[in-house]
Image 1 (cartoon, rainbow, N blue to C red):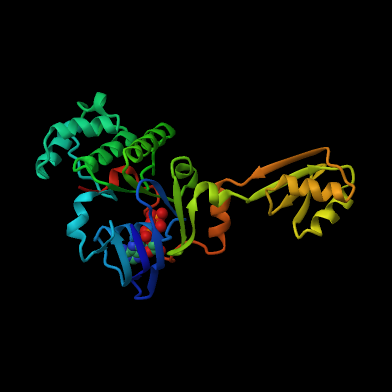
Image 2: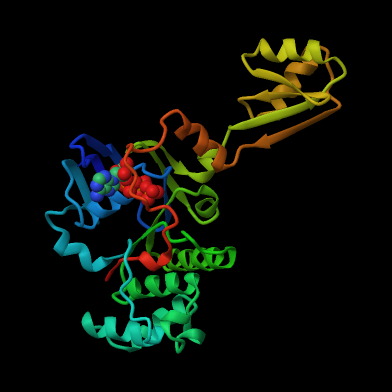
Length: 319
Ligand SMILES: Nc1ncnc2c1ncn2[C@@H]1O[C@H](COP(=O)(O)OP(=O)(O)OP(=O)(O)O)[C@@H](O)[C@H]1O
């Protein structure tokens, strides 16, 4: 999946414009889990809706499986499954019955229902009525519905929203399992910790623009701090600051920001005749990288749509 120069504006009730997506260049490699990350209102849902033909871009290009969309969406839509908002399940019917109804609607054999229930680990609870399902189970049922037609690309918009830790863990495990089968999973989130552990690669957006992309390891590499305990803090601080590092006192020691290279810090100190009696490297996690990258850009447009607190009851299954 890719986008080039993608742009979408909305008109507010007072006729002013909100730029939801602004010149977005997104690349999602085939296979694996790709995190689509950004603060609330940074344009993730709008981008996903455009990719699925649910909203029209103002300008820019989008490709799915190498073909331009929305122009040729009908050619590839069968290879895409998405969970984006709004419920489509009957509360009184069992999870299995709900899936069977959908399977009939898209002319898929009911045997596939058993397969997808297995894939999302819901087989044992498939006889329970949907209304008795926990949020996590509802979410996995929505994922199961998208799997009925065996898509190569799965798109999940904030799939762990409103879930408890066990629900989050189960949805994560489901995403990993799907990627393990060779599918591509695109998952959007504004909570990095939820995606960091499951994503192979990520794109970070802020105000509708890409601010970073790559593997989680590459994004956090080299970012961090080195903490040192030294006998002479003033001398050590002078030596380290001379390297261009930001040095701050902390407790009995010093924190050297802007490097995660403990060896280099140690060498500078030793060459200057200051011997550290303790030195540790603290690597930034993706959360700090994300905050740093998105802080100065802020969040999206000024108009909010009151979607905070949305639960997984609001999922739209594009099957
Ligand atoms: N239908 C709409 N009408 C007007 N403004 C909209 C509409 N949809 C989105 N917006 C605005 O566009 C911007 C981007 O919203 P979008 O929902 O795409 O962001 P998001 O990154 O998915 O956020 P969240 O994490 O809250 O879901 C926001 O400022 C939002 O208020």
